[in-house]
Image (cartoon, rainbow, N blue to C red):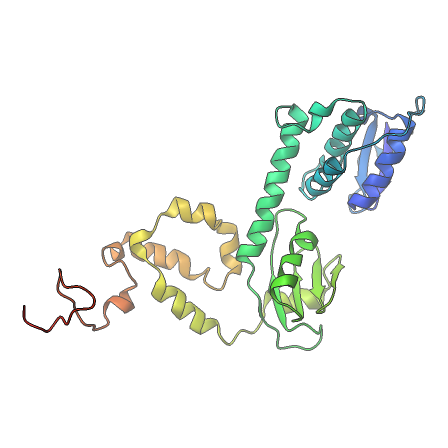
Length: 286
């Protein structure tokens, strides 16, 4: 077997893959190991296989390279071997390797879809909060736990939305900091950044929770749809997360008949008689 060690980045993998393609080394003869992986049990016994005849210059479609780079963000043990297998097949003229109907192409598209969905989760469920500390220089901080390595690519979304405001997003594996002009990534996440992001001080949280609870509509609750659009794994990092189980429990216990939060239902209000238009005076006799 041919053990290939690289830094764990797509750029590092691409450089190694280019060399292996040029040397004509087939996918089944390669074991990939990125810089953040522990040595395997049999790695010490592995030796490089002799290269076959060098192939001619290979041209790879730009779209395929973009797809491979996106699929490399999918966290799985064989992420690099699948990418090289597809690259090898396309380089040999088997363009079906990147199609959804192919066994490798199907896995590629499944990973691309999962990466896109996780990027959407970051955009939808990340909550910035004011940063009270000047230690990191950020005005807003957020904590997120992505299932895939989408932090650096997907977080540029907030650079467009928040202008020149400085912000920090920390995760268990790394962090990104926007200084108002450019994005900086650090791996691993500095402990000080993690502490700021996991327990930020947010003076407006109580107001937000009051608003969320009062606008929750139990009559429209559909648990399966809710959990599909807002997966449970994100609840504990959302300000309103602790409220959701309580509100769902109240809905199942009979609050659905009110169609609104109990505190709102108890408020006195003006009743409009049925059949009277919104522009008419309800107190005027017919």
